[in-house]
Amino acid sequence: MTPAPADPPAPRRRLRAPTTLRSRLLLTTTALLVAVGLVIGVVTTLALHHELSRRVDQQLADAVQRSQVLGRGGPPGGGRGGDGVY
Image 1: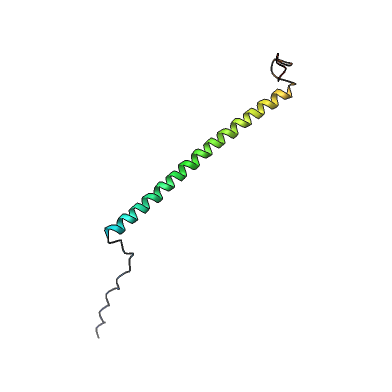
Image 2: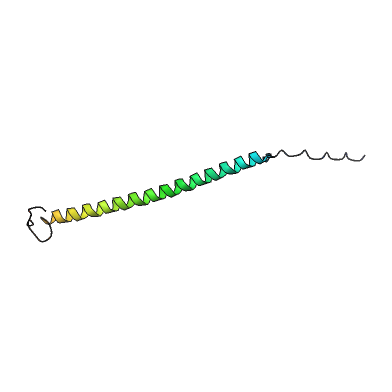
């Protein structure tokens, strides 16, 4: 007895690519808009993080300087200035 011939494999189902020009243009435009939106979001987030970190660092440095001045009993040079303001 001879073995029965194997059935050909069933065709695999693939996602169908857009076939019309309108579909391809719509898909490409949407993908580009998503990519541009992501880039803008990342750049904005990084710039804002950098600016806010810089501000906090500056405020911290100013606070340290003020605390050192007050810890010595007044402004550098001793006593009140000519205008009576520290």
